[in-house]
Length: 604
Image 1: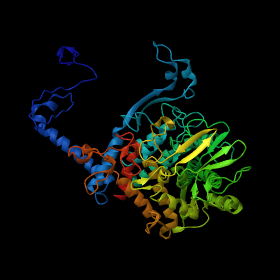
Image 2 (image 1 turned 30 degrees about the vertical axis):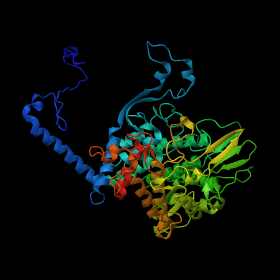
Image 3 (image 1 turned 90 degrees about the vertical axis):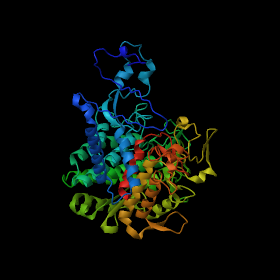
Image 4 (image 1 turned 45 degrees about the vertical axis):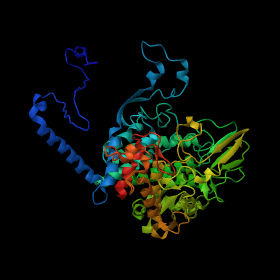
């Protein structure tokens, strides 16, 4: 029926689309229930099928409850926590979508239609003609962001591994296939600019998915791990060859997903004669090296040849860590990414004449080097003698490179060895800033910009143009990157998740003897494991009900806070107000925020 015209339907009663239409007369306050079942079997829709309908429906609910009871054991989680986690995971499963994008056809235009403008063949995506996307993908949000984004998908895969590890692995493999990955080794970012540079978190995601499945099923998928490792070697080489302008292991990744985090639009070239040496890009590469090292060590347990490549990534990490934490570049005036006075990492503005100036913006950029941390069990060093010998040789002969980094020399808790950009003293200093509620620590996680910039904006004048960064806990007023995103104050879930994991790894090495004040100035001294648990608590409480029955993320919405039909329905936003926790940005199901399910699974 079309506009009540029954003759408008296909008289052959065949086709691919259909709609049901019911005319109901209901008095005010009445309710009714319509039960539908799609079937080509006549008895499936017979009048006596109501009881069978109830049995089937109840059975499916029971099966779902039994499945999620394994993912979220009732002994470890409350009904409220399970409700939040299940909705986060359900949103991810719902956000699977068929995605079709063939760049070559887009460049040439549709047959029979006017040809596209010639600028298209010289504009964005013009050098990605090999891309042929024709797959079911996990997208951030089927309503607002119905396309894949490479670093979003990495976080989504980690959460998906809780309920569908096979699909999670397939997603990570897919982005590395030759019809996605550029021949030069770069991963595609997203449809409007495949060549944009997202943080290299793919190796981290592959390693985490492997470990999650190993814990669930008792055995890890080594074939999957080897497949992604071989392709990630190409991507790692692309990063090294592209983003290290002077061969000094200090990287200039560009955009890196943090939209308007600094004074410059990092997706655009800087003013003439300037180069931005990025603390986050260099930190990401140090983390990437350690992720690849961890994978290589795991593969070397069964294939000795991987010990050599594990040694390669260990040495690469040391060079990067030295550049971040202890190097002064030749010909410079002594500036590098670590600022001893402030106890924080900063981006550095490099001038054509060799001068370097730290951009003292207290942002999450200065915290990201903490993500570069890994521990190695003593058993592994025994099992991998070639790798162990190379470590000892390198440490003994290159003390100049390991002086200011955690270089794996001293055994810690359980005899473990530590590899990290930040040594103990620098870790303490960074955490002193990060855990200060006047700076980064929000009631709901770590802010992307220190609150100190609310009263003390950072300003910089370049070539007569003034640039300013000010703390903005909600939507941004900056026109950078179109003003449609904000890393100048809000809490972003995925980076908070990585910080929590990093603190847990530091704890594996330092143990219970290492304590920091949290919050700074409170007199409460916690182990790093307890700090990670506290951050997890703050993040999960974005969605959990407070004593008054409200949820911080739902803000002032009376419908989602009070209406009995809506108050238990959770929206997983793109990011969150840095002071109040109110959900901001895309509101339906931003995939990476579904990591809350993993936090709740760990902590209950």
